[in-house]
Length: 433
Image (cartoon, rainbow, N blue to C red):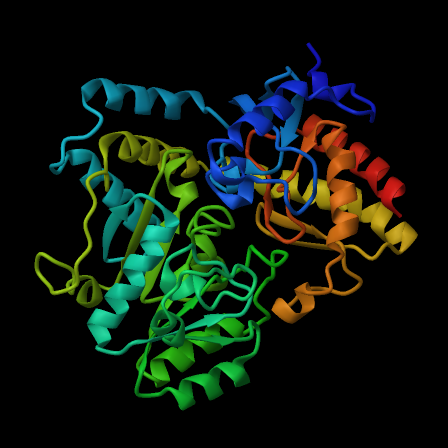
């Protein structure tokens, strides 16, 4: 049976139910969303409400189906509602959703993560990527006795004060000036600037935090030697190196970006993908650093739902499934198929489009030159992307509603899904250029 998205030609979708729900929810929830990323404020129009996700397909309130490349902002590596992951979570709920005490599932999950990430000797589980980053930064400060955190322009590390106050593309009011003053920005892919920054703050820098592949300014890859250079500078200046692998961990490779690029961080933060759809975060690293956490150290972090059985059960099953090499072979094959297909038109017509990806994370960037840092991303044509977004949306393709955020391929995408996506994206490119 063909999926409804398979035969759709471009015309205005009937999304009346989503439109009505968008209008109603905006009266009760600010902006109609519980996270601003979900809104359509960058692309226009009303948000789409979904009531089912299975494999690579999303279904909205009006019964329209979409081939999904949002991937729930990253977690759906295996696709949505994988049967064995759902079963593991259901079994955990039946046994008790939360105890407020240790369970063997936490032990098993810790062993599973540490097995995949050799840089991690000890780990703590939390409930989101934001919480993981917030805790990792506090830990680095407590361990070193220093205050300044260096991060890279255009990166996104969640919405805690330490990182949001100096994030140049996600600014906010309501932050303490003192928090912003303790975070210093430097350009991505520029070792000279990083060295100068660390030299200037040599006695005060607790940590350098980095997305090894930046996912919020167009999927920006590190240039050859950059991450290795960051590691070397952190060693030289006795600074903790934090890899934020909330997006890249497990998605770009089985051992994350640190395995892909061969760089060993001191602390790694996780979220999203680690739980296969359940709310999760984690941070882990060197034993001597992790030992600074209470109850054995002096750095405080706690959470009633941290390491809860349902999330741990889902995460254990996800990691078990990802041990099968065929998963990553499929992810890479489908991603390559997509880029080869749309790349042909881009090349034939010399379109101002950059196709940038790391593993199954990708971006279709409306820019006339590759994006290698935040300054480059400022010239991305967001208006043209918005038109493209709605053209493919009307054909049953769901992308992140943002010109700069990473899209994702899942192991559930079929060759037919990709072929149809290429066909519909090709049609959309011809409409917007």
